[in-house]
Image (cartoon, rainbow, N blue to C red; front, side, top):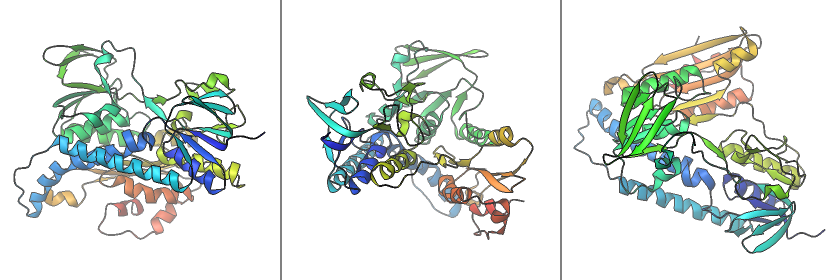
Length: 449
């Protein structure tokens, strides 16, 4: 049977575009449908604009720290509007780059919503097109909990990038990495931040020492944390948004902005017409095999809508593995072992491999944990008691390093290199045999005994 396209990609995020371009390199005729800005969550509402705001939030502390090094810095002021405009201009620039990538790869773009009619046919606007293979790469969307009275008054994380003015009083709901990152950003920029979490600690699922170190630092820097608070109510009043938090006691906080409903993201599967295919949805996500193939043999899916590991580089790698396998004759799968990630809080964190809890569950007493907590040289003259945490988890029988975690300046940059070592099966003896770069924080990873 003849089709309009060899591959039709639903979703123009990082994963979808990477897949489309790789397939086109192999000679496939490819089209992409995207009814929003190109680049997906990462470029438009996540990694890129958020990281730019992280940079902006660090300047007040850097101004203060410079005094210890002999600098005199005058009174400064912060212009929220100027920052947001600059951030969004950069996002627009990147949108154009993604468009150029598609054009250069001769991938056709449909700037419209796409919906399945059947396994080989999608409706795009008022047009129906057919494809031999179809890839679903629609990403995720913010989760808005329905069990909190007054939650309709809370915004989601996407909205912060379009605020015309800086919110002065903010309540953030949730202790996940998105909520923690925005708490640190806004606190650094001068907003009064209260973070409300249901559990005892933030960042559930990460290494316990990492969570504790970040939580203590955030509180030290001025973020007010209300933990063990399972119940809350949001009301709109003349004073602002009134948040009543109930845990062991009851407390009321008045805010200009509540939420970012920073309680996670869900696969964005609305109105895709999946019911017209054999594609299966399990626990709210598209079910796929190791080749990203769905229950419908010609339909595949990558990225956050499959809810495997929700990271941009993972979606890109999944998509390229699919394209290599199906169009390039090079059968391969994505490896989910030792995928590094970062949390852009203040302080920053980087992590790869197993947490201590996961390692003990898997190997019992056959692990050894190395920890180091110290004040980096940078903060000695600055007169600040900032701490860096470094941690290695070693499987004693094989001597292999199975987990590495860091909290501190440039953690993401440092863990990226450490991740290569873990990916290649490095042992603790390999780390010990490596000469450190002195003086640096990173050398601690090869000097822990």
